[in-house]
Image (cartoon, rainbow, N blue to C red; front, side, top):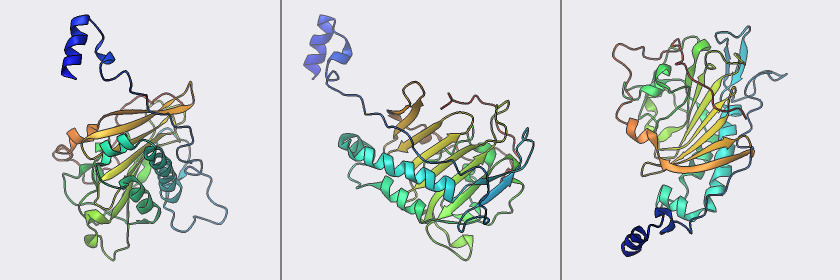
Length: 291
């Protein structure tokens, strides 16, 4: 290969012609990737469904209170996307091996865990697990963590009008102290729309699904004023990012380095910050291209 590269350089051939010309682009994924039509209002005629976490909030700029269903509707929607992408990944064995090595299918494991999970009220105990403690540390309304928190503590939840994090576990526990990292199945972030959004009552939502080791296997970001993006984190700082191409109406995969790897050691909240800042204002940002 080195001799071919040297020969190509001497002949003035482009670098991509050596060892890369035979690489085919990854196949696109056709929507839908997660059915989220029932996340925001209207409430069920018979009340809130069993097992659903209904959050009533009024975001800044929204003229009325809305109900956001963050567990069964949102979580199961993200799990459905994970199932579809697990099937897509099975058809790309080389990429799957690059992501997970010899592991069989940690993404499918995370999907099953999310579907069987139960809501457990609490917050991450350690300050270094900041994104599960302080909404202000979520980057533009996204959960970017690479692992579940190692423990759970009691939470005095404030008003959700400016966001909140809800955690889901694989089993019920009488007290949060009985929950360990391997027990976490998913985390859901509800975040207000960006300033100046055309639809000020529609949120940004982010979901992280964890395998049985507490490792993040899917990050699902839904901006109701923008688009959906999905991330499949791998074991060696590799990530597959699916972005929506509005012109072709497909999700396009891109393989690259997982930015969460660089932030593993910098997840602690700022000095003097709130423990669980439900009243922290969102950082300004621009919504991605509309669907």
